Image (cartoon, rainbow, N blue to C red; front, side, top):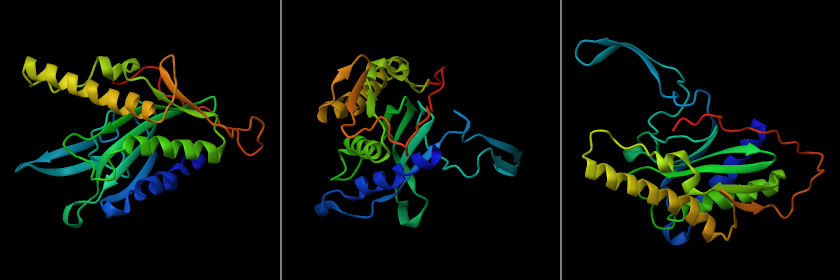
Length: 229
């Protein structure tokens, strides 16, 4: 199934590179689809310190993974959108999505932006671009449909991560900000595309789905039973 999921990458890239010609630039570096190997520990390091704020030994558990992404992943399949690094530096993750697959349906549990990083003109509708890319992918690979979680159904909506050193008033404002963003990204993007709400999911059914298509037998790739957020 992983070989199938990797075919989502060029579709996402096309949707993010096709923004209005008036604003077209090389701001977007690339898009990556990844499978989480160690939930919550992808950036873990083994380090032996040395005087002078140096390291005698510094080994990353997963050295091939893009480091420095502060997303709190909800599901095993992740999508990262990168912008080009400043002055030719390393690309920076700016937007992310995570989803799982069950019964031939793509379930999107997370659409998250990075704090203090705004999308340029022409890419403000990034959540809708991600959903449209998933719709195209579902039609290409014969998935039954795509669903987006209702914000209030998510664990992270009711228990958002807020820095513990903030004052009580600041923590309250940050909590409200996170919840508002989640509703904008999840609920707002589904509403914009006209997806109906069924229970705790906004759903889109693939009109070209073929139940007995011989070339597709999608297995489930589910999120962990116990949430990490």
